[in-house]
Length: 299
Image 1 (cartoon, rainbow, N blue to C red):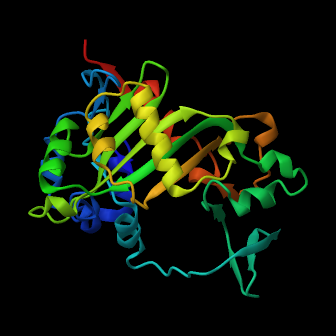
Image 2: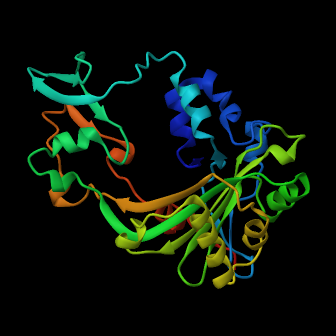
């Protein structure tokens, strides 16, 4: 996950001791915070020519890219995290909210925050009388994400071709969005162990999205789209190099939920309940990538 303009807020929330270690949870923990501050902006590359067409604006803040599992581990330090809990229901009475879990336990507090993802259980409970109002809106867009490693020579070439150590966005003239980024480069001296993540986004009906396909079929479909669209390097070479027996291939369906809609206004029970994160405003990775606020033309 990327972090730029929100960096100062994250720093205040976690405190100086943890912030001094923030580079350790990055996709490349060998790069210090100062190294990251001195990096050039993330580039958007033309899907056919590979030429830079824009840069990502970050309000003057450095662009961090965190490996989610590492970030969670850092944030969890010193926090009493109780795993394997499933929320069943809640109640609000006399300024106290009580969360009841399926294992029979309960917790009382002054605020219950539903930060439980795009398919939020808390959101569904807040709209229990109108379940449709809590439902995600499926969109006619999908993507095939692939995670893979390459030879040492190929890995060095890919990272240079990104024109930024962390990655790049690759919009296509047909309106498709593609992405390439480093997922894990912990072993600096062993580039053959680096993991890259990349995807091809495409228009796709909800019915098509729900069709069953094998991992191999998903991979071949993505490779064929790269050929059919005339996508150039760096993706062209990457899809030629990626092995046909790659198993880290993920079909991602796209949906959102807009909290600004009148029918999506929830009862906060006098300030005892709220939603946050993807539970409150799930949006697509494509919308996050091409948001106009984040782009600056290079010419």
